[in-house]
Image (cartoon, rainbow, N blue to C red; front, side, top):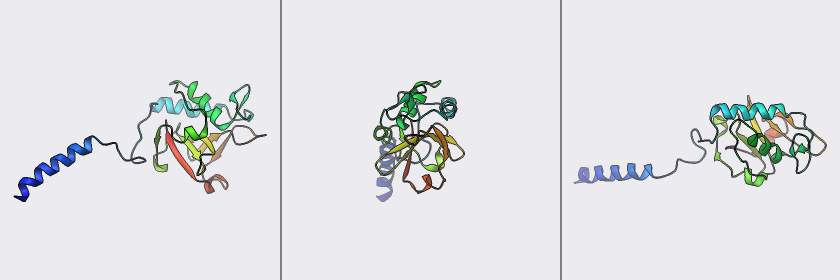
Length: 156
């Protein structure tokens, strides 16, 4: 009797699993960008290092704030993707990614309330527009300041 019930229960659980979403933050996240597009995003971001910071800025000529930099890079890449304009919106954009699964083009979102963001470019580094008076720059996730900040990773 138990064996006759076991097969239908097993089949039902397998079919039910097919209809559910994969757990967030596990395995490779799907992306609107193929690997070539993701690499282009990283190269484009690196090319903007040195651009002045400007609150609300979203162009190389006018300067960038952190979300303006991300929006510009994604809009003007080989595979244009419209990124949200604010860091709070970026914090929920795309799929959550574990640190071990990071690839170029992923987003790094700092703060428990999403206060800053950048673009991961590989080898533990990210490009971002850090603060007033500064410029777009390349920093390390394991650097003295950034390693102490709460961080989440997103794959657009």
